[in-house]
Structures are given as C-alpha cells and as structure tokens.
Length: 212
Image (cartoon, rainbow, N blue to C red; front, side, top):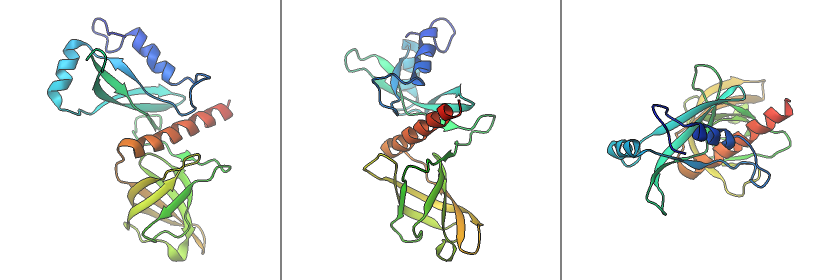
C-alpha cells in the first residue's frame, strides 16, 4: 500500500481505511485496527520527531468524523516502518472536534461504581471519550468541580472495569429528588481508551443500522 507522487495516501490505502468501517462476517463486532505502510523519507522524518509522535488520521463517516490514532511501528518480519491504526474516536460532525455522546441501550446494563463513595448508585445516561452524564439522588450529589478519583465503569459485555478519573463540570436538578451530573474525564490512554472506543464505535454502528 505504498503512496505515490504527492498523494498522502494511495488509492489502495484509502480503500483500506474504508474497509475498517465494514464488518466482515468472521470478524468481531468491535474489531478495528491494522497498519499503513510508510515511505522511507516519511519514516526518517517520524523517527526524528520522538519515540512516540502524536499522529492522527481523520475521515468522515455516517454524518460524523472518525479520528484514528496512528503509532509508528517496525514490522518484526522486515523491519519496515509502518503506522499502526488504533481504535478511532467518534466525533460530532461539523467544525467542532467534540466527542460524540453515545446514548446507552436501555436493554444493556452499564455499571458505574465510585470507590470514593461520592456518587451513590449513579445511572449512566450517555458516554463519550471525554466524559459522561449520570443521574443520581439529589441529596447525595457531589458539588460542582468535585474531583472523582476512582470511578469504575463496567461496559456491557465486558468482565473487566475501566478505571476513570474525572471531576464534576455540570450540576442540573431534574426534580426535588434527582439531579443530572456532567463528569469530565482525565485523558485516557492505552487499553482503557481502546475499551471505551470499541464500545462507542459499536453503538454508533448499531444506531446507524437501526435508523436505516
């Protein structure tokens, strides 16, 4: 999939990106990933940046944008420099780069536990890479700007929890007994980010298919 001329990506590479959005019968529902070949000149430039330069690829899809993290990797068999394609972040369409908020499936259970005890039996309303909205009892709600340092979120179909750090950025009373809280996460990295990303991407696909 080598690039030609002045094009950033060849037609073969663009076809590959498109295939990331399709769902082969033998693949898992939340599968994403792969690699792109890098030219020798570009490989030398990447190595000159740092050991882990921040590289992204964005593409439009189904009224939203996908932001793929790309990480330089050397192939074990040939030593060739490639870009590993990670799990994409789903962004809202338009100019703003705000993470898309995925509404939860009412038939699926998502458990959120605050080990600090500041949240009492919260119910998750929506979720994104950068935060979530939850509802809980008004008389036990944390204050605005309150830090939440040990949130544990169990996604539907997962046995392991995702550990999240965040703080309360919105506090909206719903009635005398319930309140909705907006929680902003600290930046996620590694496997926790990938677990969250796979769930959000899967829900986006489900909602697009149900709208057809």
